Length: 488
Ligand code: 2AM
Image 1 (cartoon, helix red, strand yellow):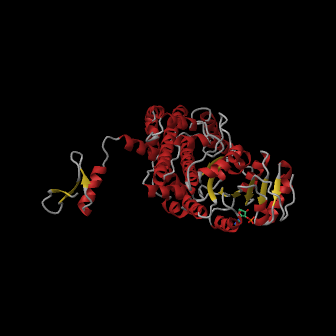
Image 2 (cartoon, helix red, strand yellow):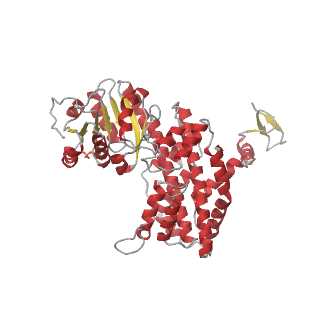
Image 3 (tube, protein in one colour):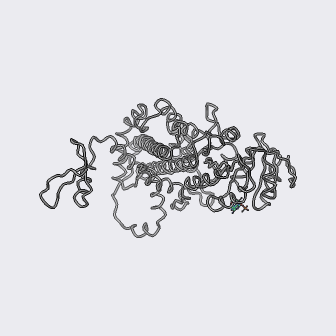
């Protein structure tokens, strides 16, 4: 039951949550429902009061009006979760609480912080002996309450004291294991959360393209497409995003009686984690074309002015397929969707591997798949197979090199090519499917035209090239005798 806090508050709470908007409140309730005593605090006390008034019966809450009371309510080492809007608010809260904490205490940032901010905050607090844990939390409001996927970074020492509590409230995978693990030092947790969101963007874009093709080329109505997705959801595409897609497509708008999807403005918005993923991938030099195309596709949709200006451009006169042809086509789209999905996950995992090496995080790649099996937005049956692929070979250079995935994608390639070709013929934009297929073809190509690119670079900028038959760097005297010189 809720008790009233005073400045002589006894330290009874195992965990504290400050920032009690929906995510923070739900996380606090999740801890309380699991039998933990939770200190709760919010800049505006009314929110704290509302939480305890409405949900006090769910467990033990210790409401605190002042920062001092909040800190005093926490058992040591103190575990203080911050659930405020990422950015300046996080720094403001850290500034407020850090002076009240002691060595060994922990500040856990459960917001969607940029991993570079988390690295900065972790380093600054480490100097004061305070652990700073950037924890990615996925699953939205519902997940926060009933079991999210949690990706904590920070020191191993902090995880020893914090991990069991987080694992307690995290989602559980089908085999019962918690969807929470220590990802790695400093910003590793927020980094993988960012990539999780990037993969989510790619998944959503691929699903949207599948819908567009079924509708525009296949001639299916939204309700029929919902049925198709429901069927796909019983197979290898079994996932939360496919499941909710079917729900959205089956929904009829109450006001007009039209399919809901037809009354929504077709301009996709974004909060920024997809963009961060692509910006970071560019810095790391990792090709995440599936995620990039997804971010750009949202951007294109939002450019009303450009779309308006281009509306009169001619397109092909593609007729919808016959009913029999449409069914065959739908089966091909399932294959294209699956193969493209494997590619975008392969790219996401490459990005995690590269960052892990770059920052010395030593991330267990299979464990990331394991903790995304439940709770989070990209949860899917298929993640257990990614876990298994890395368990079989922790040094796997790409998911596409795993025998099972390689066989499956190889079997899908004819359908995949047919779908992309059909999309092009009908003038349906499929940047996700197309980019994934181009990546697949680029990786398997025995020779790439990059050799020509190198020649051009050497021609205009003397940038030099390497040869296939000899060691060293070379430059050709393009403007003179065209003799070759070794430059290293
Ligand atoms: P509030 O209720 O006092 O506005 C989401 O906005 C949550 O973050 C809310 O709980 C909000 O508190 C809190 N928040 C936003 N900015 C903050 C800041 N600078 N300091 C403390 N809490 C903040």
